[in-house]
Each structure stands twice: as C-alpha cells, then as structure tokens.
Amino acid sequence: MTEGEKLLGQLTHEAFQAASHGKWSEVVQLYDRRARAGSLENVSPHVAKQLMKYDQWMMTRIQEVQALTQQQLGEAQDHRRKLESVKRQWAGPNTVQARHRLSV
Image 1 (spheres, rainbow, N blue to C red):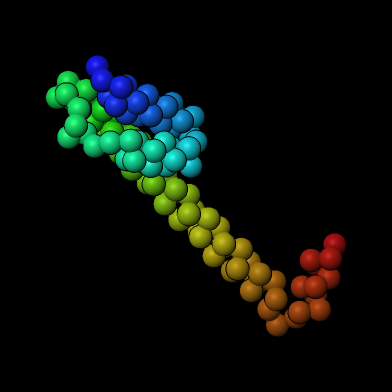
Image 2 (cartoon, rainbow, N blue to C red):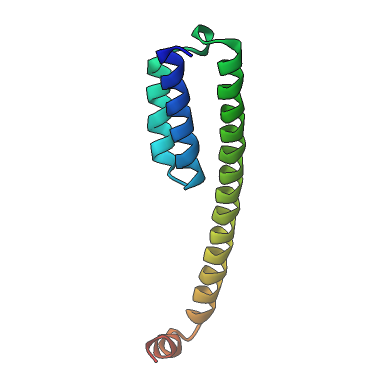
C-alpha cells in the first residue's frame, strides 16, 4: 500500500468514526482533506473498492439524517401552527379576558 493510499484510508476511516458519533462538520473537513490528498483513480482497485464501500455507507447515513431532519422540521411546523391557533383563540373577541388568562 502506498503512502497516498494509507492517507486516503486514514482520512476515510476518521470520517467514518466522526459520522458514527454525529460529528458532521468534522466529516466535511475530513472529506475535504481527502479530496485534496488525491483521487481514487491513483489507488489500487482493492483500496478504491474499500474506500467506495465507506463512501456508500456515508451517503446512506447522510440520507437518513436528512430524512430525520425533514421529519423533525415538519413536526416543529405542525406544533407552531397549533400554538398559533391557540393564540388566536385566546386573543378572540374578549382580549381583556384573554390577557388575564395568560397572566395567571
């Protein structure tokens, strides 16, 4: 294994570890360093296959995190709409009474 292959493998493994712990900004930095370190075209087919296996795992995790984030944003929007509805109900025709209820 060449020094370049070792470096690419090390950076990829570190990115894998960071992603496993949810450290996504670190993952980005490590993949940026890997991109600057060299291309997969310059490594043996065996090493390229190993690195691409990690990359596929990473893409799957990223898609899962994106889906979960979208779901949580949707839930937050639903809660916000419900709170706005309650706020409008409390601020109905008798706002003095609503203010009293909110201050209690």
